[in-house]
Length: 430
Image (cartoon, rainbow, N blue to C red; front, side, top):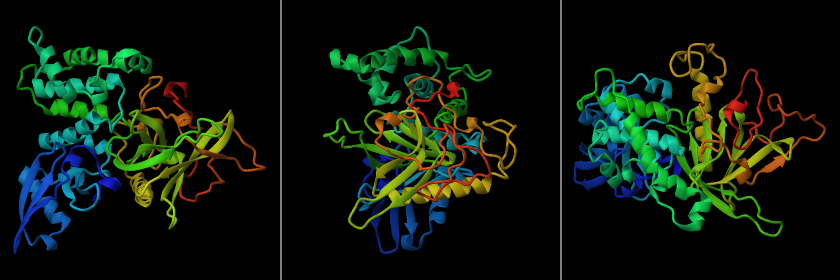
């Protein structure tokens, strides 16, 4: 998938690579710089660059990296630039490659590239994770970078010196004073290092792989499998803003910057500052549209079921973004792709063998962490939404498929029901 950083790009190492990917241009040839997820550069000497197709460029990258042919489906070329002036060309995961097929990959270099991209997203908190999961993931990074845990050696010093290589920055900071204690961040940061070391000690080696030369593939796969538990894994990121809830009758709440993450499973709105999910919706749970008035900001509208002081209502979330139309198109394409693949999708793998062909995905398709207050849980109370009901229509806590909606764009299911989306709802509470 190709797209600018501001539209469907991925910040982080990409933002540091804001220089052009065309380093020199001659009469017939150009040196093209392709950036990988770990910000390493693959230089390519390309003849007749203006006439080169994306497929040919993709093949040239695969040949240099010695990747198998399946990499054509797994990775895509992305154009990334904050201002669309001098975009950098990046080679990273294809948004449309399903997670269930990722579990079948055994090529170590392909797994390494996927691991590096996932790690970058975790460390930059673009994939919000609870502290326990950050520690488990960081422990695998320790194993890959430092080797097996060695009791009696200065392992703790090695981890402490590179702590921000293993954990997101907000977990590495040590809070001070009453304010940090009240926010709860000081306590979390103080325990992260010990939690990381404990998780590192528990990292299991493969059968017979206790030596330092143990295959790295096993740990790459373990890291990716853990990331698969995150509902926004493999998504495309977009920048936007949402209205804050009004603090009082006379004081408007203003806006907060958010990241909108879209993948084959659904849409997540993530608070950039607090590093947690504000709203997570599967495609079965939403209707959507976008508006682009000439003299006003472009808006992506998300509609979903909720409640207002105990009364079931339809909720509208307004996301201000210059990429509203692109987000809307991506949602539509992801839904079409999912519907087209449903009848023939393999029924084994992460979701188990019991799903019938053509049936709607089981709840396990979007695994959630069973923790109260998890960063993955929706926090609808932190959003300012427009709530409405249809006059004269009987309202029930669990409504059948929405028949009244501002928007006609929604996932069409043969049958089923919408469940009211609750703030911070835990799966074990059903």
